[in-house]
Image 1 (cartoon, rainbow, N blue to C red):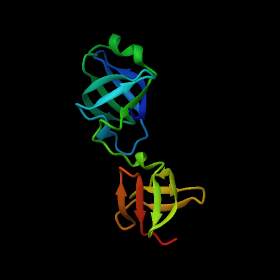
Image 2: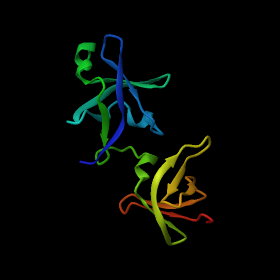
Image 3: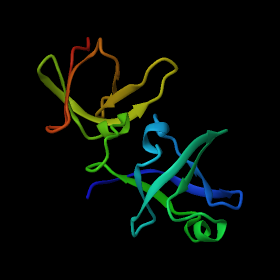
Length: 154
């Protein structure tokens, strides 16, 4: 399985098993959607999300089968993962490690994602080439080959 960390369970909320998650992902509402499966802790224990809501800086979820504070407390402090192979979610963070070609010429790998106000940027290799992640510059993206084709003026 191909696990990807999506946040950390930091607090409980109320007595009915709602948990607070801190995450810095670009699109948490698609990750923590009701019906999605998450994995908690290093043992990657699977749980299905029952409910989701956003509250301040937290993603708030309840899980099937964990309907009380006593049932969720043992997992407090654990990291939360998704399995990229069984998830319909594609996050910009998954692009880290993709090979980048500019007008057909290899320029490096994505090493970082920068968040912008209007759009995000991919940072390519040690030269720190920064490319806006918008349609005008991203010609194609191949998830199977893990490649990105751009038409960016270097």
